Length: 192
Image 1: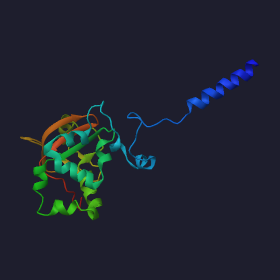
Image 2: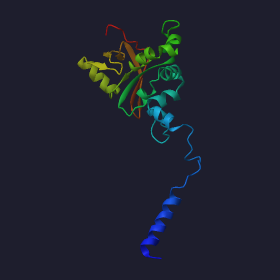
Image 3: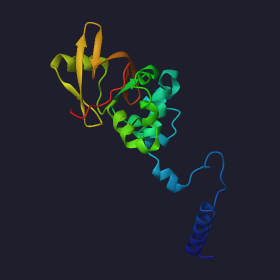
Image 4: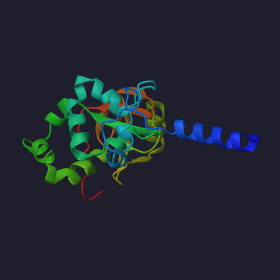
């Protein structure tokens, strides 16, 4: 056999066996179709090696069960898992409990998804605001731009920092920015 013909035969065999169909294994098996995978955003990415993002931290703490349920119902998961940096002002379960009776139940209904998403994005600043930066913004009299398109006042008082009229109770660093725990839901007003 000529060397060029032998090389062609070997390459053909290599390509043929290299491209054979593989059976799904636990490593390459997927439970969703390519179309389903494409329709999911960053929140659908499973990454157990990186530090936890804002949504993963919220899901891990009982104090934020209502917030997580609202994020999922509002379809804004990607807003709190994007690479950031971002700052999330996270209302506790008790904060949601302060809303007028029936408000939360109404917002969680599928027909109110866009209104819920609007309220939730009013809790996300697409910028890096650790507590030290919040103090600087308060000192300068600046407002924070939120993903909802609204602005929130930042004020330094004797007992701490207030954003949108509610006190920042605790600050947690996450892989994609910061979570500031707050005691009230930041419902944007129409006149802002």
